[in-house]
Amino acid sequence: MHPIVSRPRQLALYVVVWIPLTGLLVYLFRAAGLASQEAGMLLWLLAPIYALLCLLAWYPCQATPLHNSGVVRIVVTHAMAAALISGAWMLLAMLYVSGLLFLEPFQGLSHYAGLYRLIFGTGLLIYLLWVASYYVMQTMESTRKAEQRATEARVLARDSELRALKAQINPHFIFNSLHSISALTSIDPAKAREMCISLADFLRTTLGMGEKTLIALNEELELIHRYLAVEKVRFGVRLSMEEIIDERALGCIIPPLLLQPLVENAIVHGVAHLPEGGWIRLNAHAGDLLTITVENNFDPEYKSKRRSGIGLANVRERLETRYGKDASFLATADGDCFRVAISLPVERSAAA
Amino acid sequence: MSEKIRTVIVDDEELARQVLRELMSAHPELEIVAECANGFEAVKAVTELKPDLLFLDIQMPKLDGFEVLELVGNDMAIVFATAYDEYALKAFEVHAVDYLLKPFGADRFEKALQHARQRIGGSGPDRNRVAEIAQSARAPGEYLDRVVVRDGTRVHIIPVAKLDYVEAQDDYIALASEGHKYLKQQTIASLESALDPKNFLRIHRSYLVNLSRVAKIEPYGKDSKVAVLTNDARLPVSRAGYDRLRAVLEGKG
Image (cartoon, rainbow over all chains, first blue to last red; front, side, top):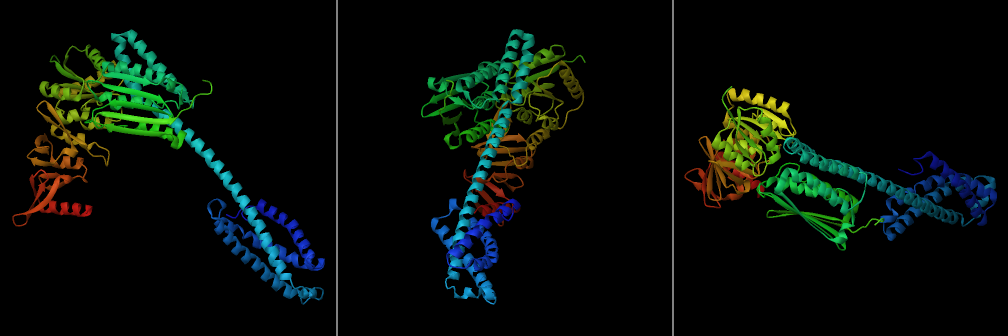
């Protein structure tokens, strides 16, 4: 789309700009020795014609955008285009002048030897002027578009994070927990109450985390402990968890609910399928990067067809939207051990 | 109804079994003959004890609820008890009498029991079809990754990658894997449809072969052929089977 022709306001502005430009041409023609009457007679027609011709300068600019064209290509393209457009203008001027020569007052023009050189020269000059303006417009436009894209990306990232957070709370976990509570109400009411509270704590914390963009690793670990408190009632001795957290890692900030899904995945696809129980090992270390691994054993014979990887895919997606190439995510299975390793930049909260 | 209803409870969570025990305690005619915490135990208990009523969880270690039924049939009244609602359709396809969604209470339990009593009084469905139904209830484009076989009260899990070939034998199929043959009550056609056609091909009315095991095809007699497998087993290839085999092998080449 031509930026001027396609927009009435730009077109009006273009016409307005051509008024001083025509003035400049008149000045140049007079300075070159033409009489004001002659310059006026030439330019009242030639200037608007050239205004039309200069609209064409947009196309070579479009064909050689500044940011991804070589200098040689830009120079050659515009040299050719400039020669063509001013050449065309000069030819039209020749036609016009040959007509004017029939009129008494303008027969003096035939004595003016450098007339066409002058027209061609000023044509080149004005062409280049417009090329410069088009490039400025192009740059402004692409900057605006880049900003728009960046805003859209931010909105998208935020959306996908929220969606991911909502998907994190596994409804089956809640239903199974409620079923366990209902079992406890008659055999151990105190424990039933305790489990209600654990479940409520976990849900409240999870829902509250949706509003935060970053939390301390410490807080995430607390959430995991709440989660495990509930699962421990369901799985009893079948569930064991070990944590090796480096002191420096505790204060690092991470997106909320980054690790809980990994632990949940370890339970749903690991411990839940092992009659004799399973283990989960959580390891966090802060060096140049914050590296966190979650390992668990699983039954390699039992291939889960269900929901597999949704939690993991969410974590991967969120790491990607927030940190891009600065974060990594690797899930590997080796024998009966499943391992997810993530690494992300070390950041500490401003308050800490 | 004075006769006892012999019941087996299958759930990997102790507390979930507790709920059922408690709800059953209001009905003295219900007798719990076994409680199982995983699929293997369930197959053993049901095969040995032949209960009238089975409460069955779906997501369990070792074998899921549907695999358990595939191995033990559905001669009894089956009530699924699970937190997952997405298996309800499949549950009714295997003729379960009810589907309890956790958490459930006495009201819902009573209804399930009522359905179970009707089934126990009436006649059961054709049990031979359970394996087929259980396997056919797959998402399109999704194939079995393992086959479960029962040998008495023992369960064998055969990953399909370790399956050499399958041979039809009357009402049974024999699954050959790592030098062993496992018998299963199922038709060869239904297993064929549950396996990925990219890996398994019917080379004969009675033979289904794992394509990666085929070493060569040799002529046999006048105009018949045999497939020689990597473990030197020789399987007859019918004319239609040979055409299919050639189409696949040439397509790959």
